[in-house]
Length: 554
Image (cartoon, rainbow, N blue to C red; front, side, top):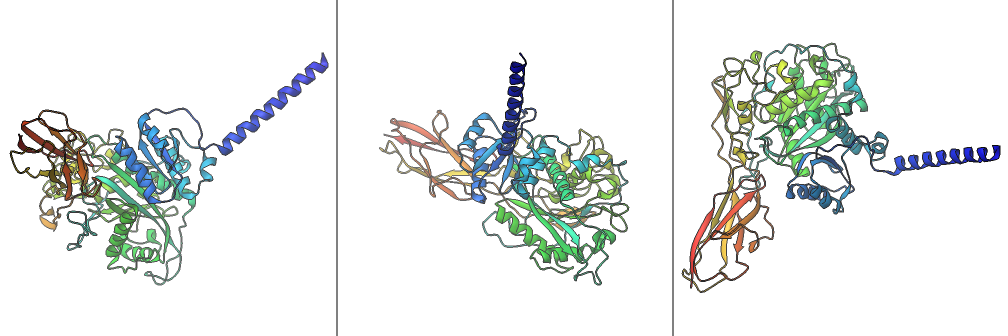
């Protein structure tokens, strides 16, 4: 009896060791952790290639199947809203390593490189509600008192030639909030060396990798605020571009914000874009344009983050901690966030991003006026709390509004960033599709499969007038579109619209303007009088007016 008992105990021990070993092997080799299942449709798509073309192909696959890509961490991963059908299509793409719907284990992410670690951290904290350790430990106090406007007025006269008709020029980097947007993040670090602060400032701040990861998570959560809005354009995708730590001879947080040209010129020069304190903005705009081109985006802007961990109030000398230039290209943040704390940096980043795309301040002490108007559509600031609408809870409003669960975007701010007149996810700035059909000759004809020629395009939605503050005209938006031809459909008489028979001249419907095509019925048309109709749909889902031709077949 004792021998049998000993044998049974030994078996249990061996079985436990084996199970433990299998669990360890699974944790080591599996690509994913498996916490509680989530079914909100949001997924983390991991890629096994390092080229942008493969990444964009996977993103377009999601969009072509009706899904949405919310954030991208090039070239390793992206977050998307998927259906089972889209998941199946992605699984067949050789560029896709795996799809995760739950939080990722930190041990697994550590083996995938720094960029994937940051992406996994953002996925866990922003989209799967796992607290960031630093943000969770931060207990911010009451909402700090606001002082003046944090929107910086751009200087006049910045214009550049276009590489394509109607496409954004090199100086049009954030005209309206739609499409794919690159936000390049640069961490500012004092180094005590040579530069525009001479002699160099005493070093008081030094970034750590963990705090930088917290900042990336908080800013990404700020971008997620915009993609979570109802009646917004789609696609609306934010692409994180981590430019790392760049050094300066200045210790920015110990200086007045008025000195920002000095340290910004230092860090831009360090990154390879030579600048002086007087022309830093030109270098910054060039950097932003280069990054959006390299990453294949429509718009871009630069976020510079100043360390302020050891500063008494987390603000610049004389006040202020966050600023942004109206319609870009630069947004300025500090780590301690001027008393808001790093755990509320997402709110600050969301507010400042509104400025980047033309939304004006609405809080009282900003000095806003309902007579002010700004943005690509030049919309009046009717939600300014100085005499305007005060019932809305807006991300551009009072500080007390920003951290409310129901914070949204006011009607006037929506208009300023281009989200005016929403019909589902179609807004004014993407109502750009046009199509033309050349009448068939001769008419009448004996040809029962007549070949038509036509062209599809996206003409810019007309911009508004001169952007004006306090009666001063600062900026006149120029016409621009980021829409492209997605598909062309045709139908005969009262039949259904279809694709077969349409052939783009260059082999693919993907141009912004002048997309030539031919239309040939796939089967003979019966004799009689018929009406041929064509319609184009752009990448935002906007359908053009119908072009038609009536033809008699004998």
